[in-house]
Length: 230
Image (tube, rainbow, N blue to C red; front, side):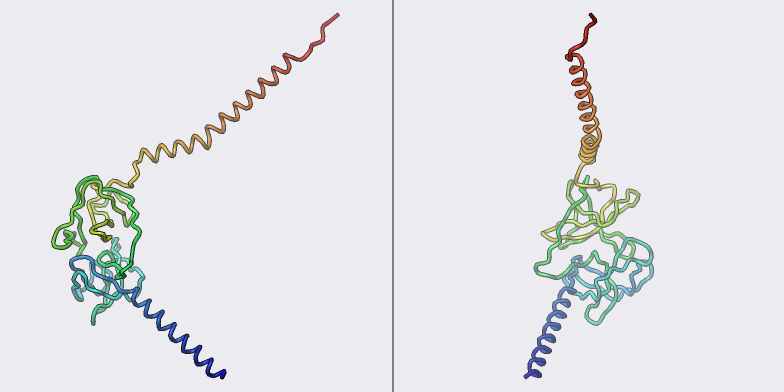
């Protein structure tokens, strides 16, 4: 009887482990969201070989969700992937998880100050981001999310943005970006108010209490009986 129960427990453990592995494999399925993407031999934009080209909508498997930074010290990031019989690396900005209910909380932290074309980076060249056969152009005041630290000295800045209920990533001219959806004057006003409430007001209240106490002391002295000389 004990052996039977041990057998049942082992089978349940095996079944659970198998299911966990299956779910994990599903989570590593990614879909190409740009018109095309290259799988390359190494995460190095200046020294690599093209292994194969993958079209939009194709499913690839991310071998490991570790991000590999470009070995040539750019801001490019890669995933290690497999596709059919091929293995290599692909730009993280060209793919997203292939989950029916997969949602990313889009939190914009900047806006576009003017109409802007969106670009993708291929072979060290910035090319127009073609989506459904058309170049993507974002309107003035479009909310975007900066994917790296803002640097006004860069020509292009990597961003994410909403398009047809999808979150896409690409590059726009840095000069077209207005940092933060908040206006600087709002932040300045908030900062001034904090300073006022935390420093100035306590000092004013303290001085007022001190003067009030001094006034009460003077009134008490002036109204108290005095001895007169005979």
